[in-house]
Image 1 (tube, rainbow over the protein chains, first blue to last red):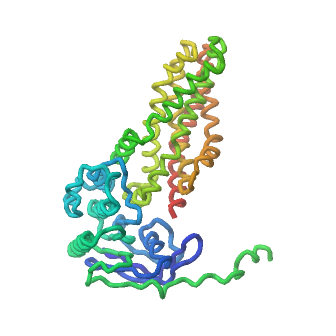
Image 2 (image 1 turned 90 degrees about the vertical axis):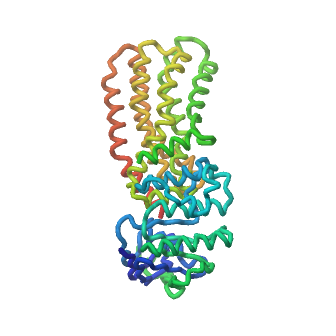
Length: 207
Length: 218
């Protein structure tokens, strides 16, 4: 059980953004992706999660092992906190939501409709979803957006616990999560060279 | 899979879920036609099969863009695509949920509206049967159109333009079943063709829709 990325190259909107990305995640490891806005963090995570094809390279991961979490939390406004979680648990073949509600400090909000939650509470619900998927590899895209400092600490504890149980986490973030054991992967050196204008492009079709 | 169906039905029934939109449209159409055309029973009973089928089709069309657009906006579609459910199953379940909340109520309401339009008594059975057989095709074809336009802002117009031509065979054979039934003629041929279209659409289109969704999610 591990996630191995080898010489991965990915594109956004037809233009290459990253190339030559290689790393390996083993059980108990966390990796923080760093890089300026627009450097391709989200594209890389979507590629690893299987939502878009890679341009080149290899992604090796066991089938159905990746839990993906993005900017949008996949929460239905007219369902309650418990109903939202129970749905994702059922989709992933899990029975019940366990203590996910308590772990993300949502117990007092459990029966409230998601449309009445604040942005940070919604985010906590979105992160609680990771717990009910039962999947070992968490691929998280800026998980701490709109969380307060206490909730960031709570989230860091959650990740630490997940790692201790043999899980893995790949996190794109701009802030310091307080995970001293996590490795940092800087994406700046992997920026793709854009193809030169004219080279192999439009004109060749007419020659 | 049942969890997804139950969730979609629950969402449709809660406030703002859009349940009843198509039904209300169908009702309004059937009430307005006699006012617009005039109250002569002869005229009305002649156009009733066509009006009822056109009404059902347009009512179905109204709620199509909700099938995937809402899930796309709140990120659920990305998460469903990474879930263990095959995307083909997701598409089929969502089309089924659309049919249960839109098509099935239309089938059940249609005899009442047939009364408003002086539909001949012998045509009621064929009206219910043809709608029962035809509306699943409307939902499945509609889900395909919704998958094609899922990433587009205000894709409703494009969705209608894409889906309407695909609806035409179902409309022609569906209305033909009812009008032949009203005249006491044999309905076997149009009924078989209607059932064939539905069977083909239900069997094949979920695969096309899932493929299109994968491309649109990139």
